[in-house]
Image (cartoon, rainbow, N blue to C red):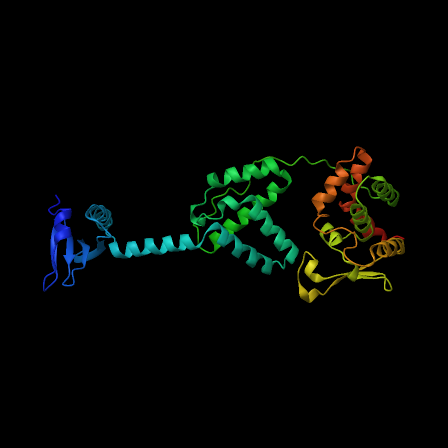
Length: 351
């Protein structure tokens, strides 16, 4: 039973030498000659008598000291060193506080971008995706994240952007794998696969003949879409480059005399400076069109004639897929499908 009161603790006066007031069951208030007061618990660890400090008074009032003493006695009963266990707990709390999801995600982006040679554009796209879809997780210690905690955020993505949901889940998986690899969490709390909403995808047959590709291009020409989208379609068809490279093409990259388009390595998916820029030959039919575009634009800005972010793949897709005619909708799907790559690879650029 406790033997001292809060009044006795508050009124304890300093003496020439340190002394202790017992609260029973090996809990003491140590009073120093300077008047400082602190709580101590004495306990046995094997055959040795140990002393654990439980905090200073009045920051640690008597009720809190008794509660801490009870926790310390439970550790001692298990044969544990009370002070060492508390130091470990403090260190783990500090690590958890420093390693929030936002911090770990940023480090994952930096390391992965370097290891996989991401372009700056792709890196920015990944960062934007994490901020748009997983921002609620950012302030949480990565050690506290569970599958149940992630589920509401993932459901929101599946409902609002089903096409992006798979990528978001993969990135979340990778971030938690990264945290596990660094020893920040004991394991990845997410299952390897997730049963969520599936994107509503309409597949078109691959078009493998030059005649078929020509028909697709004519359908695209007749589509009621913006000038920039039409130009992007033409560049895509004649060069077989990725959408991100097409919409980012600038007039300064085009050499009309050499009939080439030089894409800086920084804008390529594989961002490796040692590979040098990517040079794309421009066939005569495309070159003739581009000369006319160049004349209209005055030779400044982007080749499609529109800001690159306005012409992001989703934007191009929306404009064409909203057309009423199935043949026109097919124009986009086929232009960015493997059929174009197949024709260009088999037959080479045609004029």
